[in-house]
Length: 292
Image (tube, rainbow, N blue to C red; front, top):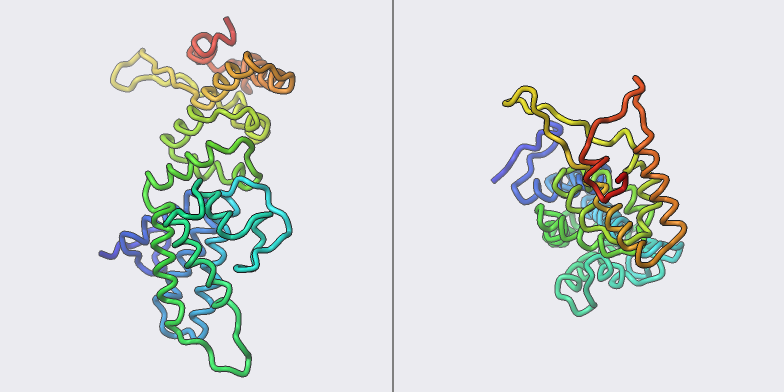
């Protein structure tokens, strides 16, 4: 069944599976999802003599981009001999296993690697004096790659698996921190992430990115069906602070203590442009005993 993608009417219609992949990639970022949409347009075209090359290039960008974002180890300039991309001080299969949290014997890791390791070969010319590769030469690999993408990000629960994997990282990479706003745009995933994040090493980069900025303290909301009554929102990002405060009380760290104090004081002392505090008693009196 074909489903029209409403983002832009001039794009090729996507089938149900492709639409789910697109939405999943969109939760990683607009650039990587745009590569996928253009890949579909190229796949559906019969007028491009270099179709196989173009598809292979796009597949490399998507696959490498996913590993760059989701792998927990910092990258270096070292390049993978199989795919030609910078993927860190590990091999291509090792970085795939790192994303999935599995060993090299995992069947899905093997399938992902089997497909992706051939992208490099198709992406480059095989001799300027030769005839171009068949237009359909990369189509089988592309369809196989779509199966991999669907397993990675094609449903809410598959993408939640990626979040679970990220939650296990002791220290976030720059790529993960930059991707979080997209990945956590959905309220349910945002709440799930901050309720389950445990590592103190995330505190400083999350603070620097403004996740605990006092202006984000949610205001009380009037209940529409009960005038005069107010609903007090829960600021889920502070659940992580509770996790860290509890952990820090057992394994005291001056750096973590100081960061927590800075965050607490900034919230407690905050005034808006009118000089008023954000009234949220759940934050000030119920959460974590911070102001008791």
